[in-house]
Image 1 (cartoon, rainbow, N blue to C red):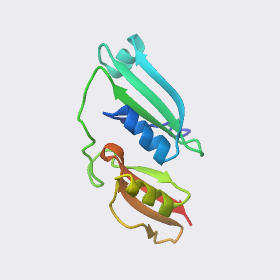
Image 2 (cartoon, helix red, strand yellow):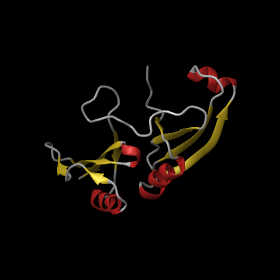
Image 3 (cartoon, rainbow, N blue to C red):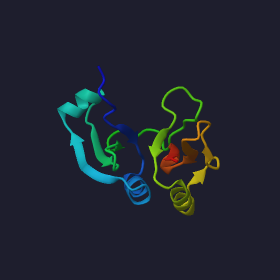
Image 4 (cartoon, rainbow, N blue to C red):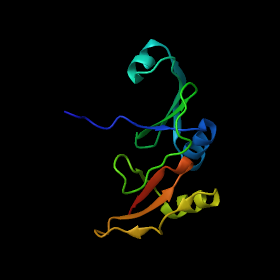
Length: 143
């Protein structure tokens, strides 16, 4: 019945720096950048007078991430999840070179939770890193 996951949406409190993180540091490409307002988005979200900037980003393999910045409705300043909390806990990203990416992210102030390690089946290297606005990223490199 399901043919795939279309995209992952992330509400951010700072859209410009979120774009810098996802595009400049992680290498995603901007597909669309638009302001959504009106009856459709109000009805879809069950809110009134919605004004949201949505930026859809794509990776080389077609993976889509959607950043949402609400001009009209403000939420929490940062994500308050954890790896063991009910609900969405992290985003796993396939990477080409975990050493280079982790080094670059740490150089830009992001914190690695653990040193990457080889999976028990020996097929991937993996680590967790706290990304922009505290979104937990699982970085995975095929060996």
